Length: 177
Image 1 (cartoon, rainbow, N blue to C red):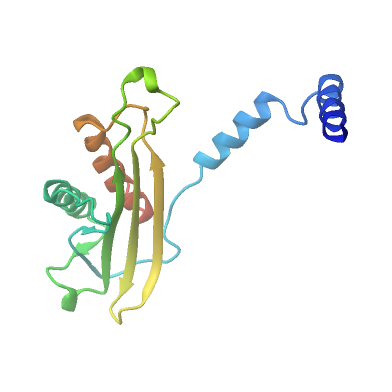
Image 2 (spheres, helix red, strand yellow):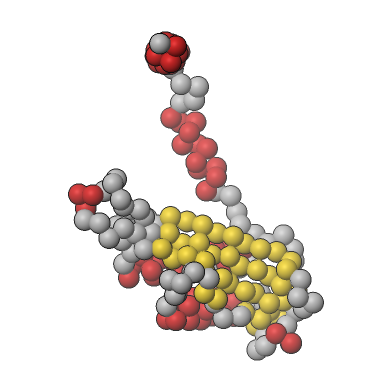
């Protein structure tokens, strides 16, 4: 009886007084969160070595093609920026950049009418460490995003995730497009 009375009072108070924030305020909060810039906390000078992309997908095995594409796009973008000189090995570098792809999860394989029951969107989780010449991690970027649709992952979504990884790492390193 007490629970029903409490619930009724809650519903009536929301009906009379309304919610504490309007839809415009909620949308503004979401925009503010996505507008936040990702940048390293330090100034990088000297040569940088980019290690091959590492697979941390816990048994789901990241495709070699995906890892190589992310690596080659990242090296090409950093060289094209002329902001950093890319070293051929760790011994000649002042910093080492390590990209670890933790998850590229496929969305649900359920048929469209099961949406809401068992479906989930594709997602990308990766981490990037900047390590100095002594082997100390100077800065870390942890990135997590959910795919653009509730459909299972496709070639177009994989291409989007590869480009997104390169874009976010370059943004973190303060490299313009």
